[in-house]
Image 1 (spheres, rainbow, N blue to C red):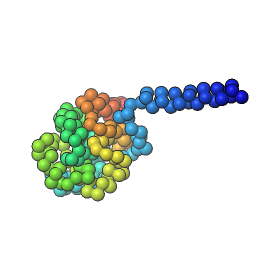
Image 2 (cartoon, rainbow, N blue to C red; image 1 turned 60 degrees about the vertical axis):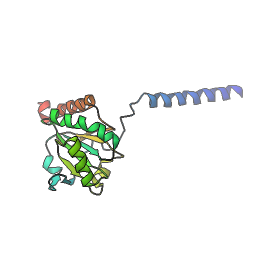
Image 3 (cartoon, rainbow, N blue to C red; image 1 turned 30 degrees about the vertical axis):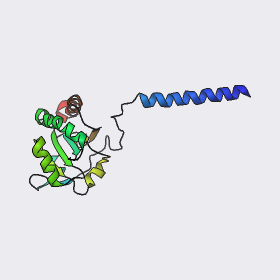
Image 4 (cartoon, one colour; image 1 turned 135 degrees about the vertical axis):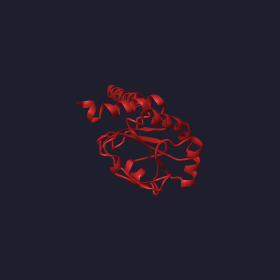
Amino acid sequence: MNWRITVGFVVLCLGLLGVLARGFGSNPREVPFMLKGQAAPPFTLKALDSGMRVTSEQLKGRPMVINFWASWCGPCKMEHPVLEWGAREFGGQAQFLGVVFEDTEDNARQFLARMGASFPQLIDQNSGVAVAYGVAGVPETYFIDAQGIIRGKHVGPIDPESMAQWIRELSASAPSAKQ
């Protein structure tokens, strides 16, 4: 009887070690989500500066970097200079878009007046687009290839190295890169 308890205990410990090793071996910034590899949900949003409607259909055929943010979000303030840099550095390779999440237009405008706004900013009035994309909180940045497929997302403030790596990956998946 003792050997059965010992074997059971050993099996339980090995299983627990396996679970822990798998969890500690993963990157906490890599949040699995169901939309990876799927077509990006279509959207129609209002541009913060002009009030004009912007649709995903209008932007088709070019990689997109979509960042969900809010003026009240501390990590968004830290991240914004990286997005500004990314839009200047890689704007020829991908369309950068900011999507204001759970915030007022006035607060978003004040934030951008202080921090800069070198790429289009859109208002997600009722958070419908955020829900469609599976946004859990801000900041979150989505990377969509020229065919409209979500290649990945970055949760939390993005750093320059991660931004550059994602742009390289989007460029590698572009039709001209495969010819």
